[in-house]
Length: 297
Image 1 (cartoon, rainbow, N blue to C red):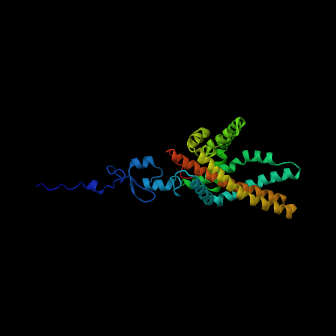
Image 2 (image 1 turned 30 degrees about the horizontal axis):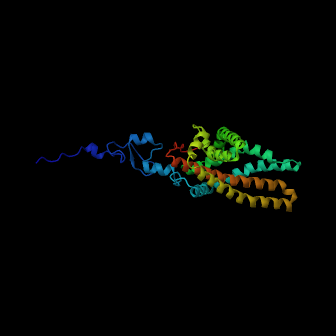
Image 3 (image 1 turned 90 degrees about the vertical axis):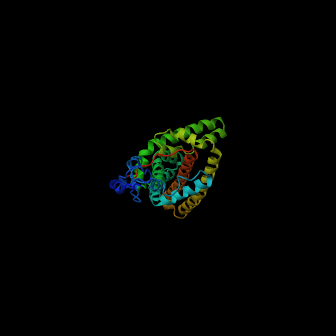
């Protein structure tokens, strides 16, 4: 009987990749230290093994959740709560500008509704982009600072404005035909803003329409519940603001700012719900998102 040959000393001492055992390791995973080969390094940046890469890109486990009304409302709240320390100053900052515009117009006997809408549809969209930047960063393991979120919101402004303007125009045209077609068109475009932010290389309206296909009654129900929650949250804020204005007439500007900032906080929650719906609908359609950059400056 011939003796078994001794293994080659060089091979014996070479670490191999657990995902590709036939390949030698060239670097360790940055999170757990597991060995990685060149193929793993080429497909993942920074260098991570597959389990760590999944956890790093979805630290809260939100991207793996199926779409549902309760799940989107719950996930939206988690995103809102996790980013509240950054969302609060953004809401106050834009609330100051919006509130002062409202106060100045009403103090001169005018009606502020049109000015509010113009401000929210233009300058105010920067805050929406910042909210989405913060929430996307938390959801996908690439947290943003307050400054970088505002910068991203400003950079995303043309896409968000384009998506909302086109969506509004289509909804108006469909509503002129009949109310029901207008509602259904609004539902089909419910996540157009989030699509414009997260997937800038795709047409936001087509993306939203495709994602909501076959789930529009669920999406309709989700946003009915979401806006009911937002209304219930905003109503007490408006009441407190009006009460302050009645008790202290000289503080009209303060109450306007308080109301405007409160509305923006509620809007941030609705952004979280819409983003959660976007993630859930992407998963329901079996679509993968391109990974985010690991940092945002």
